[in-house]
Length: 247
Image (tube, rainbow, N blue to C red; front, side):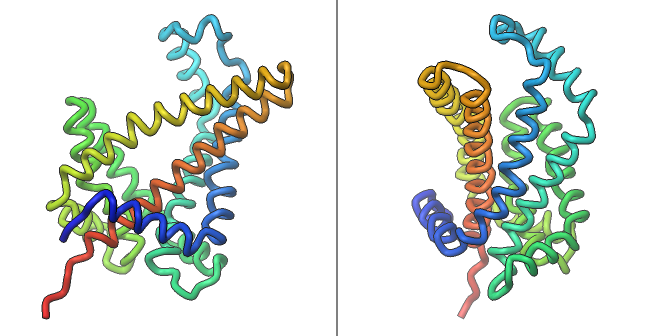
């Protein structure tokens, strides 16, 4: 069982090209629209630019935002998780099926998938509370549990956890680095690019509601692209760690 970054990204590119006509509607509905909705909701009552550097102000705003918007936030996360499961199902069980068939199958398996994602998130948070490295290690070792469930839902959640742990055993270091890069470099880089382009749009248009909305739309497109890329990378990693059958 081997996993190399070059092969992983090449396989992910092939997967994207093969199913992009079906992937784009899923990403648009379940990644882009929830991200845009959350951004538009968040900017209402957001602190002014001068207060953005004050961590206490930002923390207070975030806590107030979460408390006031529990239901929309939960629905947004639900939509994203459903989109991820739909992409997993498309690539790992959807050969020859229409997008509607894939979506229906994903809907039937959504609740167990959510339990799996919550369990992985709890493990990550516990590890992260101890120190950054343990959290990333747990996340790397369970990163393939979700695609394992999507590939074989009939095997159950425990088997999905087992498969995720076993498949990552020989490539933990590589997955650790990949996850760390996605969590830190990917997130920071995406926000930096979005901020620069948003500023350019606002400057070129001279300010106003339209360039502001275009900036939020751009951030949402970037977010949807990140979610889509991560889902396809997980599928590629799952495929790459498929146990080889002996002669």
